[in-house]
Length: 161
Image (cartoon, rainbow, N blue to C red; front, side, top):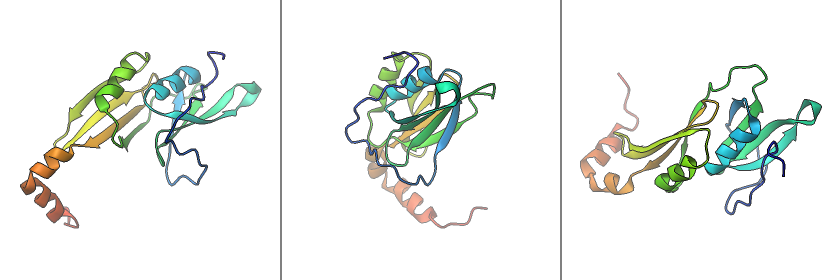
């Protein structure tokens, strides 16, 4: 395997079905293979790698969970690092994910850090400066604070002033 080619790792539980994506993120990368490897350490898998001009990889389609797709394309002079997206962590151990990324090199993992709305966020900044936030609700805190939970339920549909 060449260090310039994406890695197709086994990914039990990852939906590899090709379906119309209701939304996706497209990030540019200065070093497509290195950025791809970094996202693999973040729990994404390479769903497809499509050829570009001259035979090099022109697009890498990454997926973490159903509807959590990122398309990586070479920067080719365009500014890299302009994207930001938040995704559900889906039960991932965010502390373990941060530890995995600490050895992946190239990017930064910050957190997990608590939010005022009772979740923990792990902020991932890829080698090109794009940001993916993985967020996981703190169910125990939500369930234990019945007053806060009632306030949230009562606010649904309330007009913002």
